[in-house]
Image 1: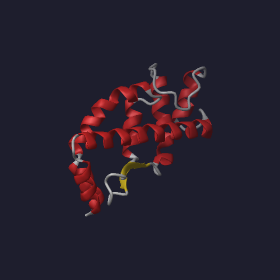
Image 2: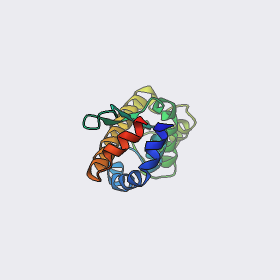
Image 3: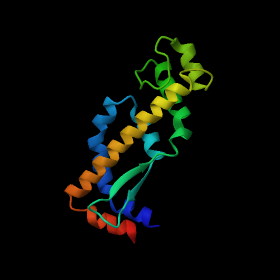
Image 4: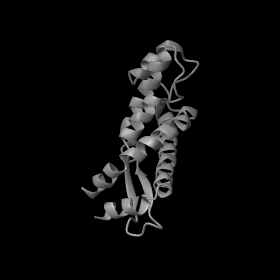
Length: 151
């Protein structure tokens, strides 16, 4: 329960970081739809909350491999519609047939693309976690957040 309590207390800060982070997501290989799915699959934890001066927010990304096929489907759907989605797993020279195959899970970039996307997602989520912790520290909320996490 304490894991949820500390997250519940910082909802406003998460919303502020979400707004600030939009530009960073736009610069990444992921679309906003893909980023939303990545964030849904990510859980944040505070490691070492007993000592706030050395504690840190860490992104638990163990569920990301489960959503990687969905990220590729989103990308394939955007490309099939003529949009410019992220670069996840689709061959830009492949055309609409390859996009449809990718959306159905029958083709596309294979596991190499998924591994690259997973690593990119993990990196971006870690960056988000760092920014969230920075905000909590700047707002003077870090120590109380750590206390709540240890209760």
